[in-house]
Image (cartoon, rainbow, N blue to C red; front, side, top):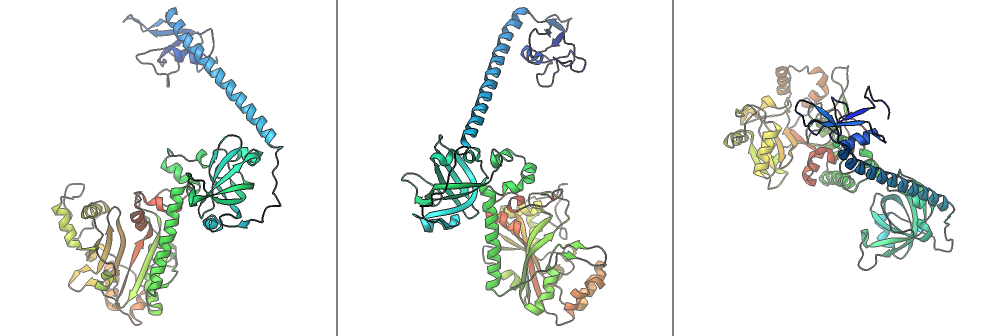
Length: 511
């Protein structure tokens, strides 16, 4: 046994009172808890002198009794035998596997040229070709071997899943023995309905007559990197592997369908899609990533009428919550010649309408307070947490309207009935909170110039925005929807990162 940082080879200490088998090192100061651990540490006989807690209150340690050592030594011997047997078994198993792999290299499979030429199809199309010979390319999603002459592959190609059956020599080749999940393959075979009493995706399976390994994945496939116990940061570091899983890929597919549905919605109402820049510059110096495309959309309405965009927006918020991202997909629309009722009347019931002032009163009545116990007052911004408590308690979507001008953006139009307020609205959804923000915009030139002055904003960089108020200005308004928050509500997902391909948030910009 090597000398460990001054530890004497002639003595080891144990203590039931203060010892620890995991952190102890066998010294007097850091004893092991058990004699067995001391013997494990020694590794071989003859053992050094082993000390235990003294029964004499004036002495800390005594040498362990021979009878006590003899009893525990039997346990140590049995452990060593078991370890040796296990190592021998593993060695023999490894030797046998290597021998099998060498034998398997001699097995060669070839295409049967007498069979019909296969049709190359995607899995989603396979059901239209039952009884035919097909060629399908994809990745091994699941793999189950049954003895030496039968294996079941669940193949994935991005359009669906297909059960494939390998029989005989097809699952005895070298490639078949080393095959692991996430390997890419090409399979050829006849598609048939599953046997009575059995189930498979699509209700059919491919009986393979020939297959090729294209790209071999590491042993264990995705499970060698990710499992159910993986910590969130490990999952995020390996997002490129995680998206291959059934749940995450379904979310991404749903995201694609929702995005398409938005486009179809706007198209059916004759909106024109535009592609505003995401790099913006206000003073001919540094450029910034945009927080919204709204100002650019406003510049398009005189040319194109109703317009929309689906593009990326960015936030610099120093928050890492379950609903915040640094980069997100923004669905924005802008419409000319509308009033505030037009903006609100687009969604149908059960969208509840609530004034900002009513929300302040609701928080007071239901004792929803700030952290210091005080109530929110009129004119203060309502943070995320109290807003969500209110929305979840009410339990239906809320159009929260008429926010004070002091807490809203400079471009929002003042309410004619109360100039302290803006014609603004947030859509709040149970379980998620705010997913949409919208308003009418200031469309009078003089009023906008006054707002610039009051906010201390230099109007010169915004000349192109201000010009919209000179060249045929009209009442107009619009809104922006956070696609990821909408998906969280629609798909009942707890965390916003679950609905992103590669989420970006505070301290996370990889991979």
